[in-house]
Amino acid sequence: MLPTTKIDFPDGGSRGSARVLAVHELEAGRFAVLTDSTPFHPVDHTWPDQPGDTGTLGGLTVVDTVTAAGDGQGVFLGEDIPARRGDPEWSWHVAHVVEGEPPEVGSEVDLLVDAGYRAALSAGHTGCHLLAFALNAALADRWRKEVRADSLGSPDFDSLAMVRSRILEGGSIDEYRIGKSLRKKGFTAGELAADAPGIEQAVNEKLAEWCASAAKVAVRSEGPLLTDLRTWECELPNGTASVPCGGTHLGTLAELWSLRAELTVSEDETGLTIRTSAERG
Ligand SMILES: [Zn+2]
Image (tube, rainbow, N blue to C red; front, side):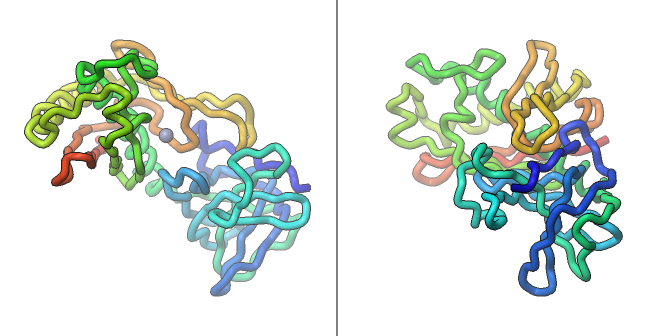
């Protein structure tokens, strides 16, 4: 079995060199190149919130970066992976999808991430986490029952109601479902559409305050491997916000010029979509 890939994107790494471990032919003249280490962030196969990095590998264009897993017989990519994330019976890899003649197995290659695209996604991802904490605080008084809290002490609406999260360049789109099961857990939806402007204002006041705090942001890793647990941390004025996260982030909120959220409630008031814009200064 191949060794699981070592990664350095959690610390903001964007260049390096590595040994090629395997090459798999894909469709349309593309190849998936697996290396022993990489600064490239792959899209997660079970929770694809942040897109894969682009850049170059040995001078070839990397058009996408995906998660791969091997069982000693074969290697599976992305949605074709039959194992649950991090299964210790499998090896886990970052697969660089390249165009053109791939490098030979065993050779050393230089890896270079497109830093502009990465920085825009990092801003979007940091903004997405801050939105979650601001939203949880704005909705805190709507809970009638005890539910699990986020690291700042608010009931964790974000993780209880989250359906889908997409990280964009300089922003994110988060979709929540306020259905029967959330109401059963004790959430009072009330007049959600009518209340949305007030919620949006409360969220944006919190985001502006945090943005101005220039708080430090870090991703703590329990080890150097793709499968090691990683936690996003931000030292906000009212406490340290933290949440498990496999993505990339800014180093400090001082890099943000502004952070704003826009709420849309579905017609039947069971869907809430939030578009967050994280502008870099
Ligand atoms: Zn995250």
